Image: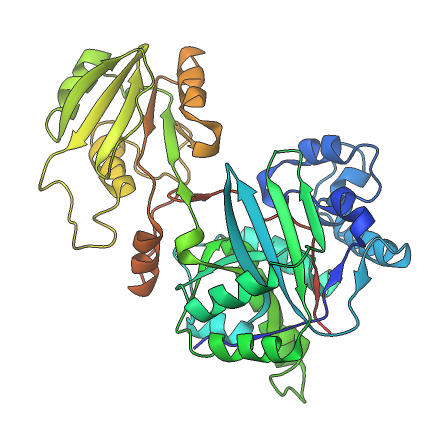
Length: 414
């Protein structure tokens, strides 16, 4: 059962929130962060991408860069750009994209819940990426950026969120990417206590986005517990910053593939090989989007094709075997194109669906890539089934949008 707690958030005064708020550290590179923060001393990038305060080309993992993060975090607090709330709250953070709003509860999630599997994952993490974020959490003694969780829908929580969000939000702005961000502070003691009680009956939380940040936050909390001879289990370091959304409100968008060559085959030979396991239909020059599970879209030589996997090439009773990413990885990328490791093979690249299928067409038409494959998006049910059965999704399966904005709230570990 999920253990959560309210906390004294550190956050920007209303008039600074748009200047402080930033995209998450891992969706842009150092140069892009440098551009976005230009002329804005209040940008959170000075804390989460502190290499922007050094000469271009500075190693973002060097000790002075981590030290700069701490220096900037302290400076933001001294200048009043970030201020700690005087009592413990839960918060609501809502995001609007294309007319759809999703409402998340901002909570302190429990380190032990991660260690014991109450917080479930569906992705493998890389130790080097964990290590980088662990250093960042450790040195700042804070979770500067939130992680993104889902939980099974709960009617009472829906009612509480509806009631709380009928008030004027604390923050309400549209970010440069066009997505709306709205934020409320839950102040009522009884409501706060009730939220904690309801979560105590929710069997699992699911990591939607931010596996590395979650692992790093939990591992640092665990370290601190081991280092404290008087550890009790209720210290602030036993919790980390998470935004939890009802699963039904979340939308996973497609995550597509582009490949540099056809492994020595001509386009005609490649199409013929596909026919072993797929019904192939030529769709012409108009962009074709996959219509349902087990239907794929191929772009090759200026034409779009529909590929429908034959019965028997997938297993709808197996949480991994049912996935289109499994079908395409095995029957197209591995068996025909000889791409066996999606994580390391340089012949393949991945394009988040937020960029649209036009981006696939562009990369093939430019000559950079030979073909593109678009997949039907994974559902939240598929994700939760995989996490519940202890399975791991193949690489580059899920893309969540909108991303959580960083800088609306920070959680200190003491």
